Image (tube, rainbow, N blue to C red; front, top):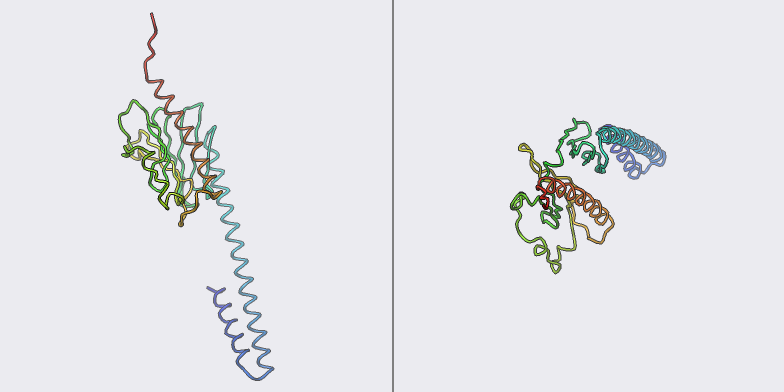
Length: 227
């Protein structure tokens, strides 16, 4: 508020300097106005620097807390608010998230054999999915052929605003976990690097969790030995 007041008052003095006809008063008003504006700008830059430094410290602390979760594979969001981690020795998936950097971290722990389905979703449209074949139908409620959902002639096909990975797990309180790889206010072209990088990471994790699902599926199928 004080910064705004300094800038506002400085602007008023600069306008007065331009309005008065007396040269000496014009110079005095100009110098006062210029000094107030400079003080306001310096104050704003200083407060902005403190804010950014504090934000970076909080992001570093959040990243450190996420990395402290036992894992062999992990991905952390750019804002350090969420992470997806795999721990192969314990066959465990961790989904960790917080609403804001100063809020408590919520950690969900899912055993590999409790993961039933995974899907890549673009703007609420399923483009890839892997399910445990021991469970009939899709637990995500989308039974349409994924390839038929895509229409390359549609102008909207060439742009994307959101890219997420959905995971269905045996967790009654929160059965569908959703990790966001990209979320933009305005759609971006599929040709842009940001989309390509997000899609590459999303597909990589889709493949990891698909392997986990298929491993669990094979472990549950009894092996018949030939006599």
